[in-house]
Image (cartoon, rainbow, N blue to C red; front, side):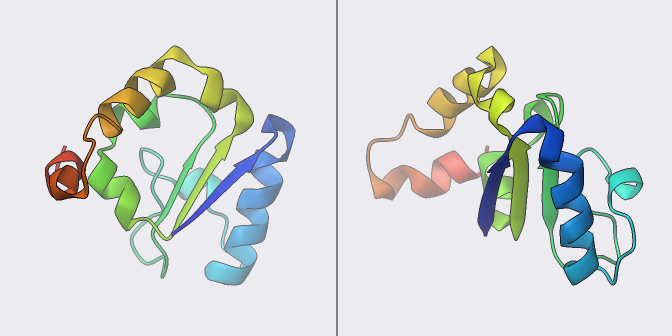
Amino acid sequence: GTLIVVPSNLHEQWLTEISKFVWSGKPLRGALQRGWSPKGCPWKIFAMTNVTPLTRVTAGELAEADIVLCSYRLLFSPIYQDRRQEFGESPSLADLTRVMQR
């Protein structure tokens, strides 16, 4: 997948641009369900403007996304820092499957 990190003021614009090319211009903003693109959207998109959707997603789900869109501000939140440590706690690739199933 592709990770897109943007300034908060451009998040909506990026979501609009993604919808133009991925979903024939249908608006994704109002259709997101817990951060995920709705059924019928050909790509699996996870977009978050705050940390709430991040608390409900596993590393495995994020790994399956075609596009993950978030703001820079999210990277400095305590919840993101906690989840980052959780996702990165396995030192070897052998443990990757276990981590991704969380």
